[in-house]
Image (cartoon, rainbow, N blue to C red; front, side, top):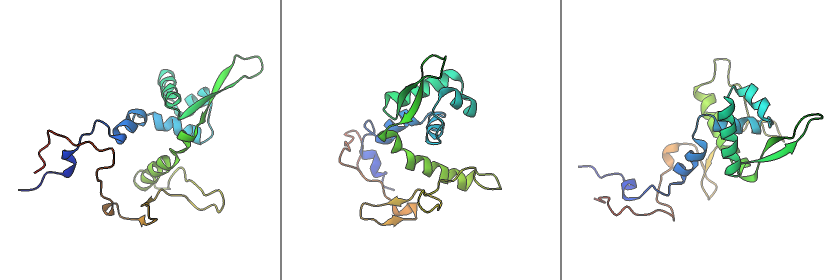
Length: 164
């Protein structure tokens, strides 16, 4: 008889992956972030480039501002009413490695035969940038099988779970 996964002994109500996906997990949210990372900061420009429905884009921008990933900066064209641009906060900039990792995966498995539509380049040397896993001791992990999930300091035991 096999042992149940150790993860069953812990609750998931405070899972940071679940909390993150509650913010970023909707289809259009990272597309909006991608646009801002690419320098597209104005609502109308985002709408034209992405074809996101107006209300969906409004909702996604509001969510990202609410969670301090983007901030609204007012601007006004001559003769027009005041509008807002959306700029990344420090918390938003911390999503860059996530975007690079998603692009790496997509470029590997979903790109057209002629290659990926976007690459990320190192500003200093021009080399292509990739997401990498690294432990706190500086070891680069090339094989995902070398990574083991384990309870962190905020893990809560599941009192109902059979621990074997």
